[in-house]
Image 1 (cartoon, rainbow, N blue to C red):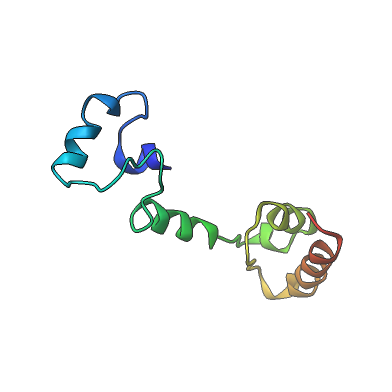
Image 2 (cartoon, rainbow, N blue to C red; image 1 turned 60 degrees about the horizontal axis):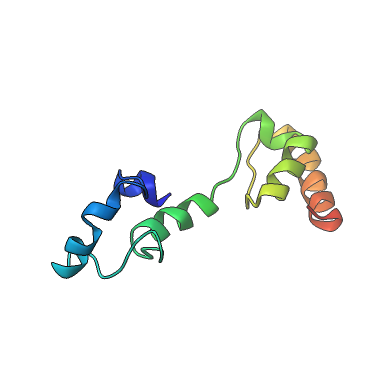
Length: 95
């Protein structure tokens, strides 16, 4: 996530990271400590993802979503009972 956010690889930044710290562009090495405001904010957004559409009403998809930590599903009204049951089962039976 840090590499994609900063558009630089951890292999390439060594030639200028000390200058960035010395000039107070950054306060610490972003590959050693998460930039909570920048990279951390993107991570937090990513953690709040869910699934929608017909997949949101599919029990196997819901179990997978529970396994990877997605925190909501959305589906068409006629699939809500199935989705609720699958979500409850996924929560009870674990990841």
